[in-house]
Length: 310
Length: 310
Image 1 (cartoon, helix red, strand yellow):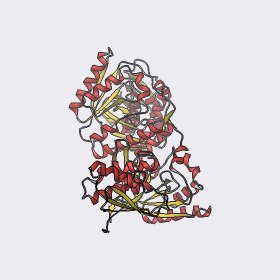
Image 2 (spheres, each protein chain N blue to C red):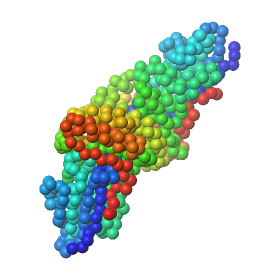
Image 3 (cartoon, one colour):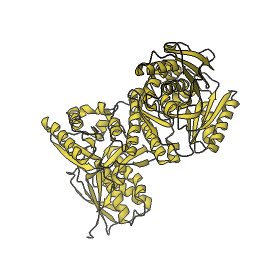
């Protein structure tokens, strides 16, 4: 067996409070690894899946990484190539940390590298988004784009994949806690009212614009004021036991802002530096533990690279 | 009589498509002039109003400029000062061009200059906003802030007056047509549904964030894609006869985007340069004239100074 080409793609935090479905950033870890190699067979096969407790399908068409890779191979006219793919899940599912996005991003990156980069990294995005769609049914890039490209990413329009990297103020660090609580993305979407008040929309547009300005200006106070979600967080908070205590713990510890990561149950805080991130993260973790909820803490600067060949 | 101190404050375009209640920019003209001078009497008096066809009250408390000036004088502990104020309206009311905001901005600037600048220009904003509130009942700064400070302005939060100047790409020019049609701001607000769909909110937040990125990056294509209002414009378009033809005329002429200025009936287009602005403006004007509606055209770069002492 050939040694294979290994790619890592990171977890990501979608929404970032005021940017429901349009903002996300990548963490340095955790993340997923995909290994690909040419085989003597015809077509793409998934030969191994680890870390998924048997929950992921081996059928290419039903697997996020497989489907993303397949769509890319179709685009490239390379479906006859024999390719074996291993998927090593190294992050939790259903955590709100973009697990399927990480797999999809790693898959397209791996195929592209194996075929000697026929496409630019950015051009891989639509195929990764198609892969993610297999997992949660929606065509949106707020996890996939940061998982693939790194950074803090604005998806102005999900259908057009009009995607923009935003500047990252020096020192910005995330603390993310993943409590041992189950929420399905579909449930998290169903809890949302299809309507928003005009007043909430005004606040949300003001905040997302303020956040973008804050990132461009490295204005941490403005970032802190803007990291507020008046629409989604109030509706989803009750799905996460102890949410408001955890948030309060982060803010008390000096976090710039704190909200639900993606569809939850993970909760993220953004912080001015790594010291505050660690303090905020530990406070958040303690707030969960105090309520008898086990939880895992991730500390990370904003990942600037996204998916990388290892 | 002393010669008096004269201040000009410009018209402004609020909302800028995707920034309902949170974005605005200033024009170089038209605008209002306020003249102030010390008098032998006690307190503030409005001694002359021109250009208002008798529609503006002389009572300080009921007049936008008077009330703004009065609130500033109270803040400064200068209410005993004898000050005479003339208001010269040089722009139309109810045009959607921030007429009351121009008067309020000019008034506070004039008082501050007369008293030898006890406050920074930026600190005058809350008093001008109070003045504007007399005119339309709402406490919002999306016209007042650009009229006072100039530029393209984000009001992240109207209550906190968290106000930020955004970068203006070189060459950006506005064309604004003011048709001879009456809309009251209150009516324009009443036509709006108090609810917005979640999907619309996602698009609107994506677009406003895209617009801010476009301004920072001088990315005119991104600005063009982002200058879309999926929430307010569709509801208000019917208040302006021929709106969609006028908009189409602007876009056909090469405008980056076109939407309703403030509460209307004026319509603005943003353009990459003055040549396109003139072409777009004339096309918009022609589209109104073809429908038998008289209209006035204003062409202007983004005003970078706001209220100025003349």
